[in-house]
Image (cartoon, rainbow, N blue to C red; front, side, top):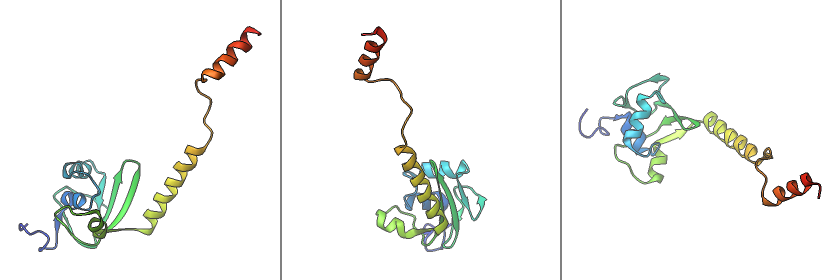
Length: 132
């Protein structure tokens, strides 16, 4: 690949993931690709594989799974506003991610089972158990 990979219409996958701000460092992007957390057009590929506009990516980060379509290429990391223009998230992926966020929000609001009593409750328990 020529030094101006963008002019040739392709960029390394790990470099593009980093430039699109999907991973904080290029090393983390490379580890995710090598670990099978990133699929290009439905296939597991290596970090040096070329990305082209129109390619479909499936990226798993933490508990979320993103389905993206590559819109533009970049080899250098720029501002977040520019990075967001490099890809487009599919409608199904966005809906699934929002549903998962709503599920987590509802789970956090649910009453939790009682744990260790606080100081006031502990004193009430002691008073009750002593019969006084």
